[in-house]
Amino acid sequence: MSFAPCAVVPCYNHGAAVGAVVARLRAQGLPVIVVDDGSDAPTARVLDSLEGVQLIRHPRNAGKGAAVVRGLREAARLGFTHALQVDADGQHCLDDVPRFLERGRATPEAVICGEPIYDASAPRARLYGRLITRFWVWVETRGRARGDAMCGFRLYPLAPTVALLERTRLASGMSFDIEILVRLVWEGLPMEGVRTRVVYPEGGVSHFRMLRDNVRISATHTRLFFGSFFSHKKAHWSRVAERGSLWGLRFVAATARLLGRPAARIALLPAVAWFFLTGRDARRASRTYLSRLGAQSAPPTTWSVWRHMLTFADASLDKLAAWRGEIADASVEFKGAEEFARLARERRGALFIGSHLGNLEMIRALAVTRELATVTAVVYTDHARRFAATLAGANARFADNLFEVRDFGPQTAILLKERIERGEILVIVGDRTPAADNGRRAHASFLGHDAPFPQGPVVLGYLLGCPVYLFFCLKEEKRHGQRYRITLEPFAERIELPHRGRQAAIDAYVAQYARRLEWYCREAPLQWFNFFDFWHEPVGRS
Image 1 (tube, one colour):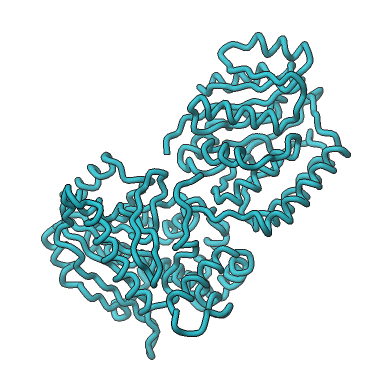
Image 2 (cartoon, helix red, strand yellow; image 1 turned 30 degrees about the vertical axis):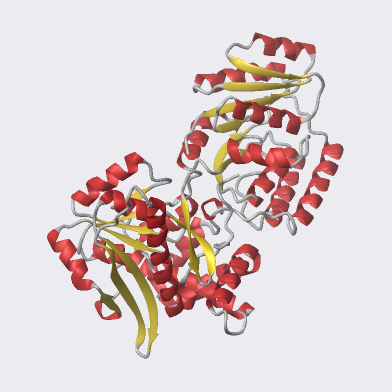
């Protein structure tokens, strides 16, 4: 996704402060759209004197929400991809603008929300009200929101935001900031927080009316609370916000390191229970998968879904153990080790197509910790940066040979081709559709139903012109402990995509992959960790 930001400043009678706000934004290279929401004559004169801004006027005051909506729509019409909402009253620390933009550039799909740091100027009544709102937003979003829902300092990705505004009428007043944030979480957009100072300048103009606006905010929370049970849209996997805090993950990792795996499993139980209780979509996706996996047997129970999630948590500990070098040689069975050794010995580049079945990290962790070969993981990590940071904490070399992508364009293919020519082994997953809007999909039968798969791995294999293998790592419980079975099997010595019948050839390769994935899923039913609606995934991001 490209990144072309602007600033949107809603203004109502802030003539004394808006000029300085606009000047600071322009000094940082941001185009500025100011929406005059029916201001008085002195403010109107100040706005008329501003140079280099896009000025929109409402003939009468329509409310802060209406002004922001007008600005966001204008920003999208002008071709910007992101809009930084900044209040005109001078409360926000505009020195933090680069931090919002940096975070937005790194995670362009996310809403970047301010997390206010207040000084002594903040009225206590407002602080208490914000605490109440944070609690209700936490309830309404099942803990997925980040930042302060009442802070008017935030960066919106415009395409999904404007798409939401086109089909949903939101609050036009002070409740707008709360409602749009909650609904964007429901849409599946990830949320990121940026700590920023907020001041209440002496003599500043505030349009917050304690009784009127608190009543309206309470009504908004009531509507959102009940709406959270019914108005919930399934999102693309790449837009589902990562759940769990970095500190929580670090605590589990430290527990595993200091007290051992049994203690870490106990430490994980509260988190698994929380995700199980609040993850309605994940429970539903698990139940659908398990039902289709065992179509001829009894339907999956709640206990089956719980065990599925618990297995996923346990696999996270396996990944930590692998990166800490704690996996003993005796506990690993590697079918295809000779072929892997030959590729490494001859420094012959290859593409390994894996999946979210079992422990995908195992092959790269073993290659790095035992210096077996150069294995590069081609990954999309925007939706799981906290867990990636936890793995990096387990081994300083985790980030070595980690190639992050959002889509496969020509430049990406060239860079990966260079790695193949250097004799590197590339690992990519083949069971999640692309994060990019223009990512192409193919459909194949999977567990008896038509399912979308990415074309990317097949096309990449064709462009690289190298041998392609399928890679799986399953965990088995043996009498004398746990065992990891790594399987490397040939997929194609070289992927051929003729000009005529190209799509049919891609579909055939994808179907071949889906058959093998299905076979291994039946080998280890609880180890496929795709906790989203795999068969009916929405196309695109709108």
